[in-house]
Length: 383
Image 1 (cartoon, rainbow, N blue to C red):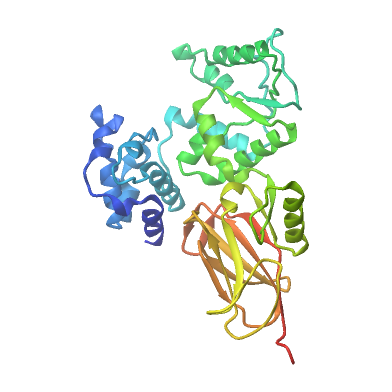
Image 2 (cartoon, rainbow, N blue to C red):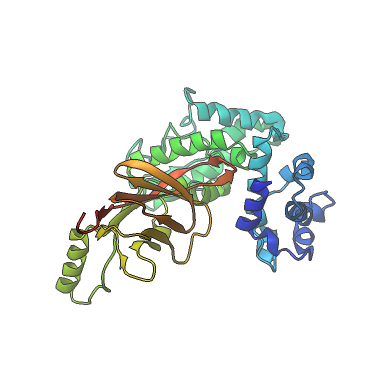
């Protein structure tokens, strides 16, 4: 039941007042299907886990997000569906795959690696590309597979891929088009198969990073959504953050001095992945009703000394902290806020991790996010 409680909080399902606008706007329901977002939200709020696991329509949602846009209570139904599908698959529910499961099997083969693909046979001599390195990466998606798998529909999706590449060439761009590209894993993710999705995401983000490209373009809407939203945890950017004792002055020399003082004081932490939210991170050593000390400080130990941290303006979910004392893990603490009593002198460092889903002691997609310089807590004066 804990996973349902977490899903309720993270998606605002608790705010639903049963107006039915989500079901009224659902394109499946409007053509006579049994799909009912309202029923799913109600079942979650009533903690009817078994009903949800047995509901075949849980995997019917098209993820168009019309219900999200029109919900007056701002319930994130699309996010809720993903969490429920991940939960269902973790409990052994295997949904029906479209097209006899051919595409899903192909995705899983790609995820496991070792599969030799001839992904560039469709390229014609008039199209200019870069094989491995470049400023722009054109993500082709699975169009070459669609044309081969759906011959009965006479689809020609590769024509669109060639046309997009031709337009880029007309703009003077010869993008990277890689033979090592793999499916983005969109359908695996939304079928609850996070393990294989993660393998694809790690391969693809590493592939693009090695190309040196600063811009990724794609003609596929599902690929664009996956890269923009689902791949965010796998990006490998690292940013240094410096806590300042005062706002930066307008004068460049004075601003440089303030910044240098912060660095010399060790008031620094780094973030990986979502660096935008990391800017809101605050971490201090504090004495109840007394002084507060910033990252990198040297502080004499006294009773009641504690670590306090958190974020201004989010995130409000999916954060775990690890406190490290003298190089050894001391505690894991569920976020988004951190409060931890410092019981003895030592060097204390705080790490923050993001995760996608937490069910009891199990955590999905735990990934490093923030690493702060240590506080050094010295023995009381006179000891």
